[in-house]
Length: 230
Image (cartoon, rainbow, N blue to C red; front, top):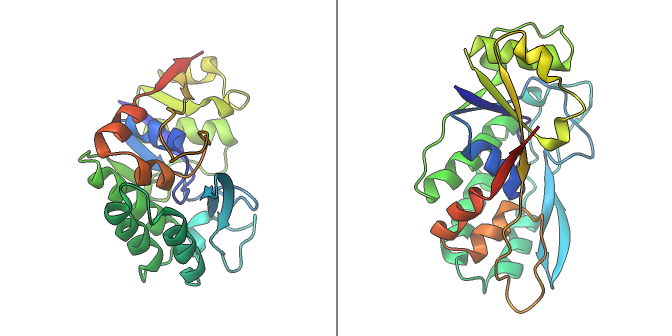
């Protein structure tokens, strides 16, 4: 079984979804510590042809707290209106805006729950089924170092392949995984250029931008635009 493990991010870029797409089972690493100034609660959308950052506040955010212990603020009206204003003329606005708003306005504010809800809603919209669980539900040794925690999760799930993004190449060693009967692979995510209107293509935006401008089959094609590297 092939698994991917990542902290829960809210509406991240397409590379995150490529990792989920290629996984037989995807683990939201929600008992990791919250990363301030990271991408758990922020990303970028297109505004007047430029990338514009949006942030969902996390009251009491601290790098000493686990992600699963924190919640998103319910003060999201401004970001919802910003998305409406900037994407109202996008081809798939009417289909995607309700999905976005439903996640942000939902009464459940827990970070993990909101992010999982968003991920599952997006894959349902695309007509795809993916299996997602949370690391907080697994039995593994949380006192270990980063690499051994991941190996512990893989063993708990009886996975024979672990795929991480290329950003984690400095964290993990293939020999350590091989010693436990697990193959370590790295996914090189790629952007597939698509029409965003009249301006030049702006890459690395939130998946919201992709969904607003592309029909579902085009998004699925973009999800397949990745490769594996050593």
